Image 1: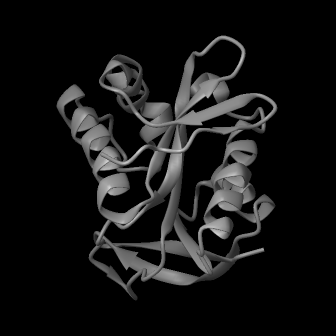
Image 2: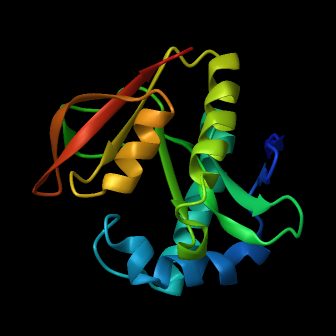
Length: 173
């Protein structure tokens, strides 16, 4: 198994996922506020478990993946963010590491996503990522603001799962 690097910011610790994250991750993914723009429905505990396994598998296969995000002061789970190769059936395809993020509702609006994403992007830049991309629902204004704040620019519409969503890209800084 690959050792997932630990990244720290002023308020956050990004670390590899653990099996003990399941309860917190399942609660987050069951929250309709969190899933409104990522699938449009709450996810089951089983689906949350599959996500955790997918995240850890990315590190082994690609040398990058998603981190669990926790509060640096108290260790509470806040969400997850990172890079993936989801092999999405998307047109046009995403052929660079895809960035994604999801935080518990109580963490929204506090600048935590931007803080963590910037740390992950700096790590990616240092590991040879010339470009990264993300897709965001056109109505997800908060995530669009976060993406722009972190250097992503709109790269056009893409079709995914029968819907049009927006693709954003960022060149290494």
